[in-house]
Amino acid sequence: MNASPEHLIDALGVSHQPAPDARIVSLVPSITELLCDLGLAHLLVGRTGFCIHPEKIVSQIPKVGGTKDVNLDKIRKLAPTHVIVNIDENEKPTAEALAAFVPHLVVTHPLAPRDNLALARLMGGIFGASEAAERWCTDFETEYAALKAAPAGPACTVLYCIWQDPWMSVSGDTYIARMLGELGWKVPALPDTSRYPRFAWSEQLVAGLAGGLDAVLLSTEPYRFTEAHADALEKQLGIPVFLVDGEMMSWYGSRALAGLRYLRQLRAMLEGT
Image: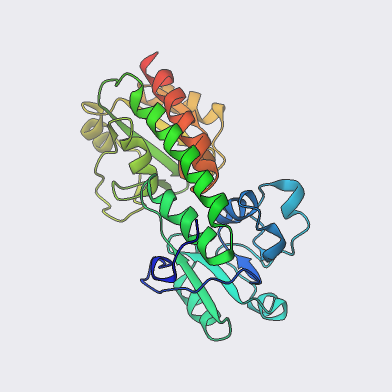
């Protein structure tokens, strides 16, 4: 199945043409992995240092900096036809600078698990792997159906933490919150109303959340929380605190398949307390 050009529309509404001979720089780790899984690794000429999956393949692809500190000169020398960016992960000034010399900027912004279907079809359609993308979408639908067929547990409110010093969480309009939403869980509203709100543990905050907070989840990325962090915080708060795999919860693309399976494990873990 080949996607028609009118369906190859990115997150900014820009329409793209099929480009099976593209030279791609991916600045989005999860999409780098997706491109490789769709059989498109041979088109990748650059990636970030955070693009670590699949390791054996990406180790052969030149690095162009991080997701936030992109080396524009390195990208210019690689002469890509397409650079893939993400609204959350990459800085707008970087995208604007790239647009000045890269023919095609593909902007992505999945906000919910099922947005991965359109993402896979967009990548496959632009870069000549529509059939592989459709197979991936079939696998996704199978995993999603299995998640929905599992017995529903009680609704929970969980505080998902992505950073400390300062402490940071996620708001309800993020991909992570919508992953949790597939379990019927929600994240609490915090005084900071930004998408990734900062907060400080205080008597007032704990008192305000304690009545409706079922658990705290500490993510293994971007901050590298450990079981030691979880144990210490649980003693401090007196409610369950779990360490969760950040890649499974926040990476879209290929890892979303395993992420759906992980959600079932997460439900069992929390309900077992």
